[in-house]
Length: 405
Image (cartoon, rainbow, N blue to C red):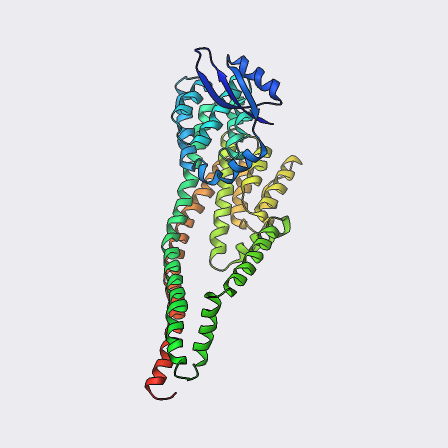
């Protein structure tokens, strides 16, 4: 639906600016007049303007913490008896992020005109994903919106804690790798060429390993570097295009799960995410078939997505969901059996919650061990590379000193 920027005058004579979503300019003006806002000018947001906004959205986009804070505060305000539109107005005033603030203004304005809160926020997928919107829809329909928002904020906080643990564990290895790569670049592009130049002046032939290192140095310090970078860019671009296809995503996820060290960790994260999300959605009152549809969209793994979609089809056909999950190769037979038991006993939500908590606990241990193993591994590999460079650098000097040249 088109969006329109407007300049208008409100009842007290003040001039205001804002954005409204409507089918056409007439509908936009009518929507504003219903709210006692009298537009003096109204213009559709151009494609170029939207493209520019999208280009810088990565810098203007509200953080996850900001969305969590907004959700918590909304739940508190609604729980205290404040109307939805008033709560949105209050939170709009205290929001510092300009883009997020404009989104909240538009959502509030559309709710005032009679549009549902769910439909209004569904147009802002940058801030409110499919899980968020689905749970809000349940809260609106059942009259328990504050409870749904509290559940969402708890779910988002839990997911953020898990992601933070992964990021924190990888900071030191990444910093170490970057430092070692910078050291290699400096030795290869600055130290080796100067030493080789001095030896070349004597008219002596360089050792084989030093010549090969000189070739690498030549590539890194000449226009050949552009050729290499262009080739790498082309490969990465083509690979990204392929991975966007269904077959490409499927092969990528299959390879990731088969990796020796990271495969088990990725598998645990995928299954924990599936169990946690499905448990939360079922707990919010969303029907099983709709919950599986939402989970399939956010699972983040093609194999798991395919299994969840098959499980949904089986549910609609009156069958169980455990069989396609077991056949996916992502979920272990033990966990699939637990899902089956929970389904038969009518305690699937509790069973899924227990599964996600157990997997997340074991994932923390795997992350710590993997981080502890990566640090010395990176040090050993980079020490070997720097050792080869040092050997190639010192060898011709030693030969000159020994009079072999």
